[in-house]
Length: 468
Image (cartoon, rainbow, N blue to C red):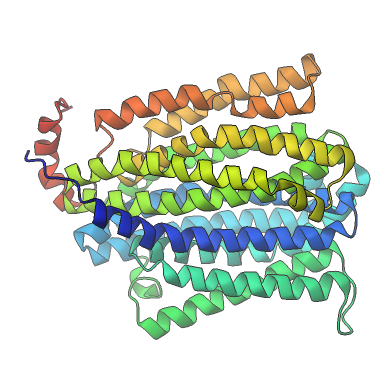
């Protein structure tokens, strides 16, 4: 296979075109969460901690549906590269159906069994009571959030990345506005506290969906609202879709359960530690916001070329994305550490909770360099059709290394909280080395489109990969 010079200009320009709007949207969302936390901080550390634990339940829901988002974007990007419109609409309809099933399950738990949910995450009655009142309202937001996520995933895969950004801007502004009114009872409205923050989240979800639908209709974009075409599946297509999604789904669900078990450990610490964890999770979102941009760039820039049959271009882009991501994540972490003092204080941490929060940020900033590299590589493999390798590694290390270390350190050896927290990232360096080896093997390029399948044999021969 003939190898051409790498087009850095095209690469960097399109990374920016895709990654920057996605990163900005997520930064705005995280900023909105920070503003919420600052508003709730005036109500005390218990309120901050309770809403933070509810956010961990939302994260578990995220794990439940993200497997379908990852699998769906694999198909969206490759079919977009192959210009297969039927494939895009069918895979979107299937993805949306599975995602909404997850939304119904978690919304039902939040609305009808909030006591059960809060009892899992903490044993502090005062925190449980606040969390229950929050979940009974915020459960209505879950289907709205998942619908917006499905629409945004498809729009990003077809390189319409600005529309989700506009929806995100409107949602964050609405969330901050409604939260201010409802938490503090402004302009004659009742003072609802944490319940007001939950209702603000529901209203913001409505605004996000409304803005996305209006923009899609205005631009006359295909795929997203073509409801009659979304459900034209056949058994063969569903089988192929589930085969690709299954490893991702297992990854996200099992890792989500593993993280929930870790959060249970963190949620049974002192009230100061619980508050610090809640604030940390919000600030962690700032780093993940940068990562999410590269995740989408990897999915589109790599998956599109694999779908079009340009496998060498996809391979050359992949490893460059990984190192570019790590470099910028390192910069983001340095900035976060530099400004941590006013941030932690503004979000209600002081004394012991401030000390714990600072330690968590320092530990995470070191771990994030490797952690985000692992995530970027995994998303790259998924976009190219290899959903299994990274998923198997992550699940194996979570259950054979991370969870035993965290539980033994906390319950058997009664280690300091920050050491227990650091052990949550103990597997990252080992997985990084294994992921790098797989990256340079090029075995992760596994097309699903007809155009991609036409050229894969030539690519594998050029890289010395034996046909199996």
